[in-house]
Amino acid sequence: MSGSNDEEALAGLKEALADSGFSVARHVVFPESDLPTAAELTAAGLPLVAVFTGDGTLNAVLDTLAAWDGAVLVLPGGTMNLLSRRLHGDAAPADIIAAVAAGDARRRRPPVIACAAGHAYAGLLAGPGTAWSRVREAMRESAVVDLAQHSVAAISDTLAAPGVLVRQPVMGRTEGYPLIELIAGDHGIEVLAFYAESAGDYLAQALALARRNFREGPHEVLGQAMALTLAGSDGEPFGLLLDGEPADVGAAERFELVPCAVDLLATTGDG
Figure 1 (spheres, rainbow, N blue to C red):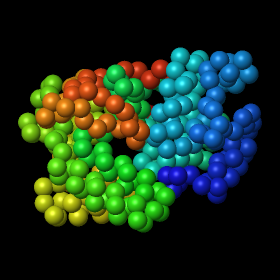
Figure 2: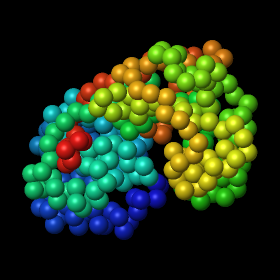
Figure 3: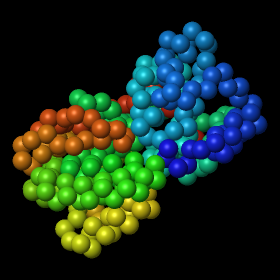
């Protein structure tokens, strides 16, 4: 439902796989069907799983296949495709598949963000601003009434609710921010803070959401760390999204870089 994963795109993907000599043993549409498990893949002698989805489904697949000895090919089938960009740059699915078929890919286990609530393979959002995820879902479903209602609620929540701050190491404002994003990188977790202090800021953020890229809204880069602790500025639990999916946390949560638990195929030199 991300907008880049439709019947036409899927047909193109199947054609690219066939052209590159890949045989599709099983096609799974999640969540309508169960994800394949490591044991099932091993028993069937299948060495490769290609994932053409958004970040939330990708999260479920990689968690399910943790400790599997095969490889996962992440293809850009979502809106932001952050993990795919780390592994393949801005290459299109057909070009990525052709590179893998030509032997121009290598296995690697890139760092991902881990916390008590789970893993974030593409990115993590924390704070009352996670209420904007409801706006995103309404946009995907073209639900105009829901979009208006959720936009009003998201603005209200962001204005009224206490923020989230980086407690350890100390970064940015001690009063916190409406939304903090953590992005895994090879050299640390990048910390971005989003804010909305004026009508102009809210308009800029609304326009960014309308373009389906909230990162174009007002924000600042706070820094980078191998591990850090986020906390609610009022000592209460805060909102959290792991790869776009909600998760429960307490008043403070530690996040750290860990290796991905399954091999991913990378086709770029810096992936």
